[in-house]
Length: 262
Image (cartoon, rainbow, N blue to C red; front, side, top):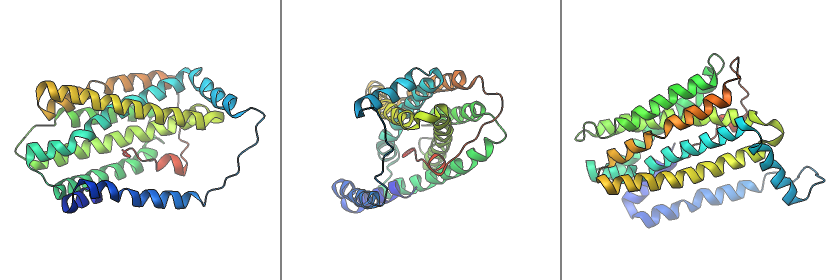
């Protein structure tokens, strides 16, 4: 919630090189904190390579888990395809500065924060698919309405908050479903899910870039990404179609995962 706004302010004041350099500080904190974690590993009779492949085999032999991993990739495709060009969109189409972008990200971050806290509560009453579907519709609306009122910067605040909040909701739902999909292979599931999101993000940046190059319009590029959202919804539907009651197993790690993080 505060990372992107701070980086934008640094960029506005000192340039993009200093903005990138400022990212070293949280990395140093991360590495220092890592020293506090235990280095104990559960004993296994398998070698490292066999344990590695066994975990991935367990995931890909489980259709619901595989569909969830695929859905994570689609969310990465749409989200990072949008986020990568958002700054240029605000600067070129609206004449926004780093300070404006910083404020946009603060408002958008509040949407993510709200989603992260509402979704676990909503899962006690509604099915995971219903929440994922509603969030997908909101996500698509945010992308589809990009460019409406091109002379009004407040529209960007609105669409960015929609996209951030609803994409965060989808991410939280997926994280919980992934952690519950194969309890004895959670590490492999989350590893593949994050890899899928990274690959999807790279594809999304390329798709939005090609659409931008073809139309020379950022709003059209964002709308092109919305087409992929139904693929994620369909995948989650088939992954959860046997779910009869809302299921919720939320750990600290599941409820605080960040999508930007998302």
